[in-house]
Image (tube, rainbow, N blue to C red; front, side, top):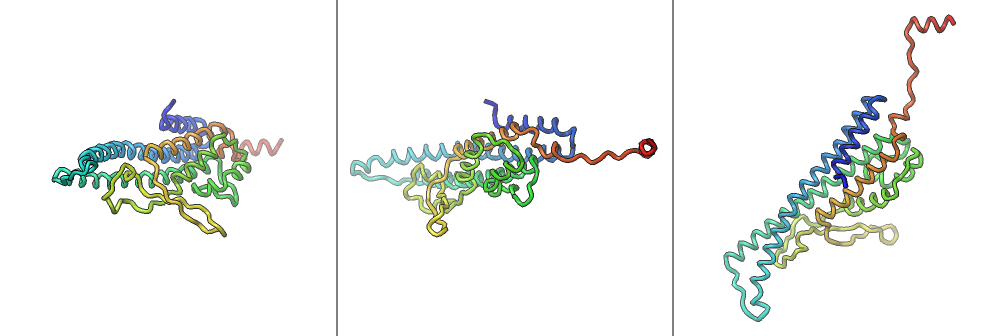
Amino acid sequence: MTSLPDELAELQDAEFQRLSGHSIRDASALHAALGHVLRGYRYLELIHQRHVPTAKRYKELLAQLIARMDPAFEGGAIAYDDEMAAMDAEMGDLLDVAHLDLETFYLFAKTVLERVAQYVELYFGPEPKLQVRSHEKLKANFDEYAIRRGIVIPDDLRSALSTVHEMVFAHRADSATNEARAAQSPSDLMIAHTDAHPGPNGSTGGVMRLSLTTGQLLAVVDAYLRSIVDLIRRNPNRARTLRKRRAPRELPAAEFAAVAQS
């Protein structure tokens, strides 16, 4: 399978070549808009690549720490020596870095989603009194927008949009770092996450869960962006640039006089 960055770059170049003959300004604007999405996705890849070794080192230390606690299961004593203290301190630092990576991932992922919404509106054109230029507006109004603009929607786009909104955009962290490290576990690599759910009488409640890993989050964003690529490829003739009315050609004075005399 072609990598997502390659797919985005191929789409970026192909659309520029296809549309620049109609309007170099519009084609350049679309090229730049998709470039923002590409750059944002690259940041997400870098955050993930940095996060993985941090998480692995934390789990290694945790396994060693648990092994040092084995005598306690037989009723023996645990010697909390300098080595264990150093391991505990390093684990605390690793947790902070891991949580920083996760929060940074969410931050940039939300920016990517906003850029995608801007690209979609720029590609297909604005619709009067129907906002789609932000991610939340795109999610809320996309079906109506697609109907009005005559857009063919890929089968998996609605599901991908709903999933990326729930798993990424709606994320609200309750704590960026763990305050208590007395009972460290692999789950500490995650951060507390609150899902907002509507309650009775329209009230909003919160359901606590752990965040996804950066690998899981990247897969969710990846699926959504691939569905956006599919959306553009399925609707080549719905590009706003191709649907603009051409202004009447202004005739040169000599040609105008000849036409007037005929």
